[in-house]
Each structure stands twice: as C-alpha cells, then as structure tokens.
Image (cartoon, rainbow, N blue to C red; front, side, top):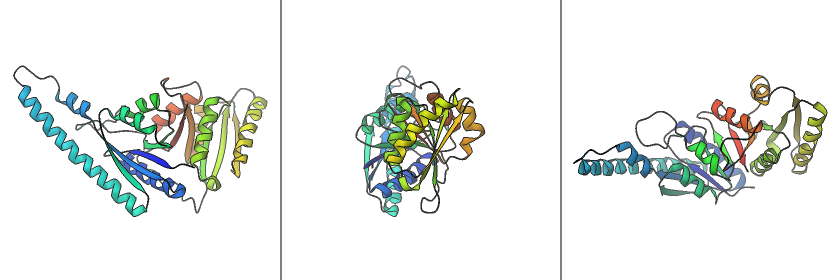
Length: 283
C-alpha cells in the first residue's frame, strides 16, 4: 500500500499522463497526490548567458522578467493539476520549490512512496522543445521508486481487463527489490505478471523464477507466468514479450549512474524506447 505520490509538473503531455496515472493509483490506495512545481532559477540565469561590460542592469531586468514569466507558468501548472485532481475526487496538495529541478525532486522524493513523472522531461526554461536530463539525474540519485510514463498511453481499465506486467528478472537483489516495490503499489487482484529471465541455462532460470513466483503468490497475485529465454533480454522484449506488456518493472542502482548489467541495460532501453510505462525500483 502507498500513501503519498509525488508528481513533478512541467508543460508537456508527459505530465498529463503522469497526473492521470497518479490519480488512478491514489484512488485505489486512498493516497494523496502532490503536484510539485520548480522555479528553475539556475536555468533562468544560465539562459541569459554572458553579460557584457555595462550590461549588468539590462541583464538584471531580463532575469526579473523571466522569473515573473516562469512564476506565471508555474501557477498555470498548479491550476491544471488542481482541476484534474478535484474532478477525480483525489486528495491532493501543491508544493513550490526553487532551484535545480533534479535536485529538488530527489530531496522531496525521500518523503514519498513513489514518484510518477514523464519518461521525457521539460523543466528547462526557454523555448527549447528538446527534453532535458532531469530523469537521468533523478535516477542516478533517488532511492524512491520512479514510475516513468510516456506522453500518451491508455492504461487498461482495471475493472474490465487485467493489467499485463512484465518483470525483467534475473534473481539479483536489484530485480527482487524492483518487483517487491511494485507489488506495494499494484492492484494485486487486477494484475497478470510475467517474469522474464534471460539465461544460458534453462534449468537454472526455472529454479530462480520459481522463487519469485512463490513470493508473488504469497502476496496474493493469482495470474503469474514464468518465461525463460536464451536470447539477450532486450532482444526478447523487443521481438516477443514487449508487445504483451502494459507496464514494465525493472531495477536501477541509485547513486551509481545508469545502470547495472542486463536488467540495467533493459532499463536504459525501455526509457529510450519510451512507449509504455516503466516502474523503476531503485536500490
């Protein structure tokens, strides 16, 4: 069970998906959603660029103008978040921060059960349409699970059909942690889990997968599949198993950069592919 969900807000379709997803899980768990906005002061200062001799006063006025503009955008974001949560009848709150977006998210995430944010982020100030590096930085330092969402995605209606969850599993502490953290959040009686393991030896893989299956059964999961493949994990997901999944569950090492061998390489590939939600259980 989860009680607090953090949603960092930016002006993108990814944030729209994140808010929708957060509200759905909040209703299921009777949890609270926090919409987080960040006034990127360092980014605004950087956007002004070098100040020529005698241009200090102009630069100061420009910075003040950009700060006011950013504040206006922030209030618009909060209003959109508030309206959606009220329509969904979800308990919510708003939080405003100043500073680096990635650092602010990492620090605030310590007090939440999960962070739901876009697989692409657009926190940077200015007119650039290119995604920023905030997610990479958050993953490198945040110990709270991250639920990354694409820009457009319609998650299955839990009341009408199962939620297909593909777990990239290798028996490591990393993959076990990711699986256990997802189970805390998942609608247990609505999910169909497939445990996928890439290994050269089928007998070894089956033994490892059986232990994971036993844990999931103890947690109340009714629909569980075990899948072994001798293929590299990314090839197996791309060619066969990825089409089946609605959500991917994988692991990542926080404070060690991106990422560990095998499961970590799958994590990087899924984020880059960016078509379906990815639950990333940090360790």
